[in-house]
Image (cartoon, rainbow, N blue to C red; front, side, top):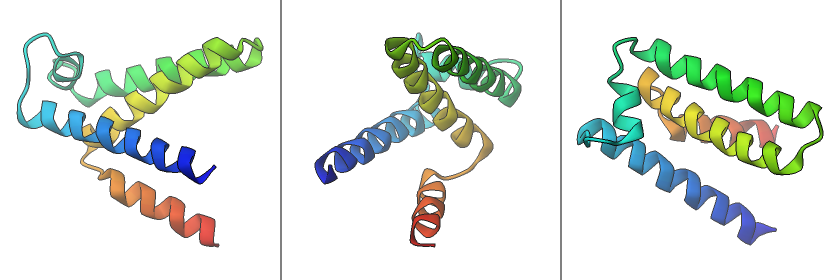
Length: 103
């Protein structure tokens, strides 16, 4: 189980690094770059979070495990983009989770 946790942390860290890179070095054709520079700004990113959250909820409600996994991944990803767009550091969120875990 600890190995899975370490892997999950690695993946989140890698995704965060890619998002940070797209902010610093926008790439033509990059989904993240396009999303972050959309005319609607953070509103567009938050629309995506809302959309993915709704799709996740429906997948869970309808008992579709493979859709639940896919939509959870989409939601995690878009949540990371929203954190970056809002200027919130992922490490602060991780520290809050650690703090809550320790009670």
